[in-house]
Amino acid sequence: MPGDAEATRRRLIAAAIEEFAAYGLAGGRVDRIAAAANANKAQIYHYFGSKDALFDAAFEAMVTEIIADVPPEADDLVAYAGRLFDNYQRRPAVRRMAAWRRLERGTSHPPLGAIVHSNRTSIRAIAQAQQAGKISDRFAPVDLLALVLVIAAMWPALTHELTAEVRTHSKARRRKVITDAVSALIAV
Image (tube, rainbow, N blue to C red; front, top):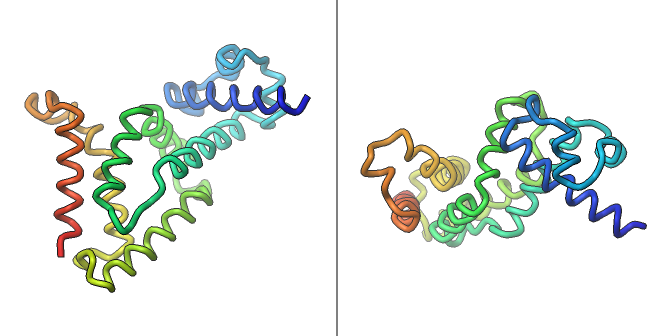
């Protein structure tokens, strides 16, 4: 039945995201993924062909969901950064999975089309907003987008290595620091 197959595929991807976020591609185990998805290993190979392909499918599904949940918004980069922060707080596997992909795939693996498309669209919109004088042109559009993405995603991840004062900041305080920083970057 097609419905059952699609449900199994979704369960496998969800389980793969958790497994690969915790252990990476090399450390992830298909037997644990299958067990967590209430499936069997043969289904993984049937639907995805290999563990590597499952990793790629899981990463792509995660990115597609994030882009749908938090669409880039060049007209309001401050709100966009805040929503990204909120999303990363709700889904800690996202940053871990992205880190594993960078570590294990490096630059030899082609970038994901959905990310490239989203970034190109955002860069064009930022350029238009800069040309219209809505946001500062102090940074090139590509650099400004990169700064917003890094601030929203990585600053909260670094708080553990910072002072005790920063580590005790509430999520609301960390979110405010992020949105204030993006406000400063785009101020005309």
